[in-house]
Structures are given as C-alpha cells and as structure tokens.
Image 1 (cartoon, rainbow, N blue to C red):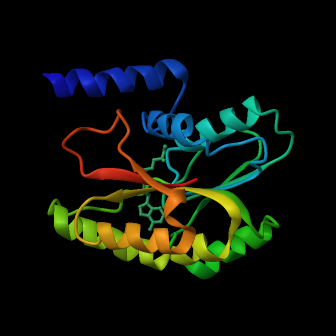
Image 2: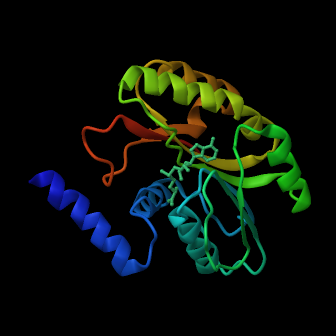
Length: 201
Ligand SMILES: C[S@@+](CC[C@H](N)C(=O)[O-])C[C@H]1O[C@@H](n2cnc3c(N)ncnc32)[C@H](O)[C@@H]1O
C-alpha cells in the first residue's frame, strides 16, 4: 500500500511538472544539496539519458542561471525525443569509447562541466551479480571521468550497494580527493532499492 502511494506521488508530480520520468526528482535533490549546476555550467554529458528527464532538469537549471549558450549531449541505446535548446541526443552504446569520442569531437567538446549518469543496465535480479555487472560497465567508461572532466567539473553517477561499491568509492576518493566525494540516497528512491548516487562536487 505504501509502495503504491510512494510511486504514485512522484509519478504524478513528474506528470504535473512536465518531466518524462520521476528520476528528475533525484537529480533535483542532488542539486539542492551539492549545487552541481552553477553559473559556469555550459557543457554536460548525460550518459544513459532516456527518456530524458535529467536533461530536462539540467536545461531548467541552466535557464535559471541565465546561461546563454551551452552544449548538452545525451547518449542512450534508445532514441530520445526532446525539443530543448542546447541538447543533442545520440543512439549509442556508452561502452563504445571511439564513438563517444567522435560524438564529443563533432560537437567541439574537449572538456565537460558535468557528467550525469543514471545507469540501469539490464539486470538478472540477483543483486550481487547485477552490482558486479554495473561496476564492470563503470570500469569501461572511467576514462570519461579521468580524461574529459574539467578539474572543477561535477559528476553524478548512480551505483548499487553491493560487491565493488566500497572499492569504487575509495577509487573515486583517490582520484578526486575525499572531501569532494559524497553519496546520497534521494528520498524518491525506493527504500528497498540498492541504488545510491555518488557525487563529485
Ligand atoms: C534509468 S534510465 C535513465 C533515466 C534518465 N536519467 C532520465 O531521467 O530520463 C537508464 C537508461 O540506460 C540505458 N542504457 C542501458 N545500457 C546502456 C548502454 N550500454 N549505453 C547507453 N545507454 C544504456 C537504457 O536504455 C535506459 O534508458
């Protein structure tokens, strides 16, 4: 019963506010706590972006900050239809490094202000195995964090608590410094879910 009301609340809220998914409210909570989007945010890469609610939210934040030009690139295996300024979306596999590099080069993007990643790889329902698969995927896209993020750039990335989680946090702290890495489980995540967001701010 509670589960129904909980999901229904964010679903209705998303519909009312014109968001394509209720995931937008997770990014909203992260923004309120960590100020990912600032007056200087102009280049954003959204990996695993469909149906596009995080991109919608990012555009709203940039507008709020009176940004006049920006580049927001979204990548997903599924097609995304958004009619928004600054946004280009691509059907591509995020693990295809050469293609992602090509997309960024095509858009004259060398360095990013924000990388947002709300991944949900196909799961098999065995939580530990799913968590391990997810960290395997993260491993294949780690170059995005290390090679193309500005030194003061921000990262929001969904991970799962389970095997590999502690090691990943440790590694990110090693890369970016412990004081710049935090985790948050937004209120709009289901309580029983193992998902949690790592933020580099
Ligand atoms: C939870 S959804 C993202 C929701 C999005 N943040 C939003 O707010 O609308 C996760 C997405 O990951 C995509 N995906 C899964 N594997 C992928 C891969 N290897 N490359 C790119 N996208 C992938 C799925 O197609 C799915 O649309």
